[in-house]
Length: 171
Image (cartoon, one colour):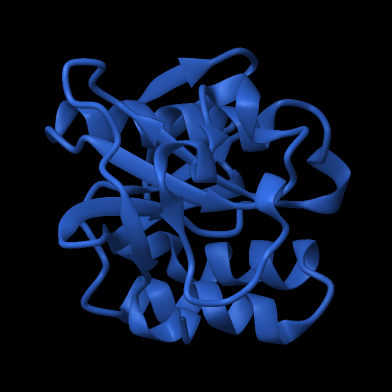
């Protein structure tokens, strides 16, 4: 357990499964998005310790970030799944705390690379840069500024290639 700003962060436990599901259902626009993250949590791409909850001062989970296995070309990497925060805690730093804790946990596990498909104004604060500048792309068309990548270890620059996600992503 760690603190990030006002939030406690820790790895998701089995007891958190229904709570995390309720966070996803409350945070995402459609149940399909919640179903996607649940499928990733049940998939072989799941990596123990890389599903992180952010909690309030009482320890109640209010946010969730998940890193799952993907590949950049033939190189193993991680993918940051859609991050969810209960609506009443959005824009309070709870999502950022979960992301920072997940990235730190990945680094501690010796992971080197992370990709994310998301809002270009949000992820640069965590060190993500435009993936295309490193020769990283997807097999589907997405806005160039939306696909980003991060090297967790500066001694190992990002590889190039097409990102292959876990099966639930369908990409």
